[in-house]
Image 1 (spheres, rainbow, N blue to C red):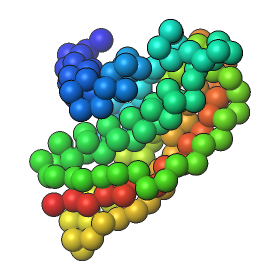
Image 2 (cartoon, rainbow, N blue to C red; image 1 turned 60 degrees about the vertical axis):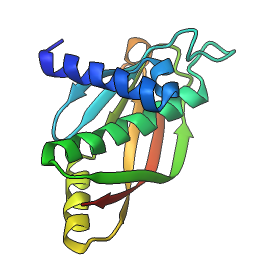
Image 3 (spheres, helix red, strand yellow; image 1 turned 180 degrees about the horizontal axis):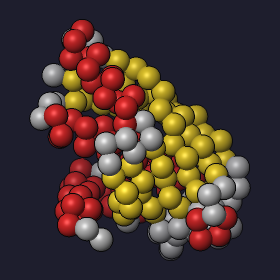
Image 4 (cartoon, rainbow, N blue to C red; image 1 turned 90 degrees about the vertical axis):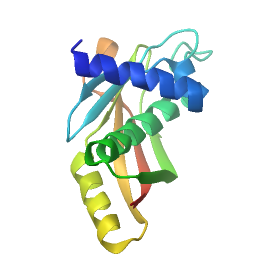
Length: 157
């Protein structure tokens, strides 16, 4: 693991346990991070497994929320701007039971940049849908286990 990802994972753990303990309880790991996309992994274990042996709905929702939120936070940090955000709604499509560690991918970096720019220019809150795809590479390769559409609401200053 490179130093930047190590620091990002440490910061994630500290933030999660201090502000949103359920995220810390799910033990997410940042796998990939760049200006365009973010990928996290949530391990399947006693904390995240349901009675059927697959990842619990709440852990899947936490992963979707987290990958989108981290991307926004990173964009704000990189620009040295305050970016207040929330998810107004979520739609989930559960396709298969994820019976291994789950990766959550969000490739909305360019959209988030545009939203921040628009919010800074207008002073208004901007709402747009972003997509998150959950896969289980150890069991199903790149096949989607779940797809989420979250309406991201951003106000930048």
